[in-house]
Length: 251
Length: 219
Image: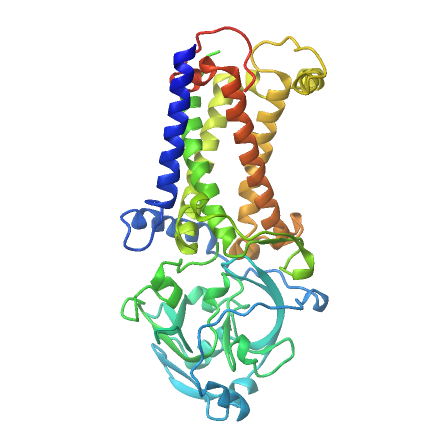
């Protein structure tokens, strides 16, 4: 019995050393890793399982459930961006272009004159936290109907004003079914504050409560309806997606 | 008792999957290492706030890498678990390994024995406490571990808005998910410890299938 016991101890010790090495080493994956395509294949599977909301709605909450604190995650704003706020965003325009019948550019007053919706929903961050707020805005679907989506369109790209430390601007995208969801908003009001405060994406942000928070692009100034995401920036459909986060963030 | 090959295969695959799932889960947790009850992460309702886990315990290297591991391997864990249970049922092994009503009288004596409060009860094969633990783990703990994870999906929330409420809200579901993981880790440590205490033949049975010594197993 003595010899096998020794062997077992050595075996366990060896396994322990191996796992310690492997856990910190070769299991660290990024888009250049050879396992990356295997792991990312499951995003399509998860999307196939979950991405069929149709018109089904996420839970809405009573005003009493609104969070007292709402964590802020944004990149850096250009130095002169805050002057827009002091001028009431009078020079700000939202341009809508790409595969649409009537491309155009709209002032904040125009956007706010369209039929508004209000919803109290939860936003879930990829980091793990959740917060509930009352959002006011227009349905993205109503804007798309206003400009008329042309055949061949598949995605809506949202271009933002914030930039990372290297000067790379934030952007995001969603497909047309997510864009047409009745709770997908272009929001200009946060807990009764209109337009949005700078922290929450002033003056206009996307709100996509069926997916994780990084899909809800803040500081939007331009929307483009496109057939493919490949030609834009890193080609993965978003700032975080280009770095390796899932494009489908419903899970 | 021998371990049939489907049990050995699913068992060792589980070692791999659970290690990677726990490691990647800890890396995901580290992005916001605080647990809450309720729907939201209200700092006033934090139930546990640690500094996060050391990197060497985590898998994936960064949040997106850990998520890729976690959301890919979960399906292998689920399929593996379903194969395991299907084999237990189809082969009749479930009768020997899962808790049955007649086992209920054997649980307390076994607890007393482990606490050094009583003599070792007589049993054949697996003891009642073992069967209870395995049954709770396989039929309740593992499904709940997966289901609380699914409750964190904002898309799933749109399908079944009542579902998240079952766990007391999204942040509660996250806390349960973490607690169940901790339970699995605790079980694994005890499980390996008891296998080691039971001696080489018991481990050998799980490695190569056959056990050469007699007597009951405590792991």
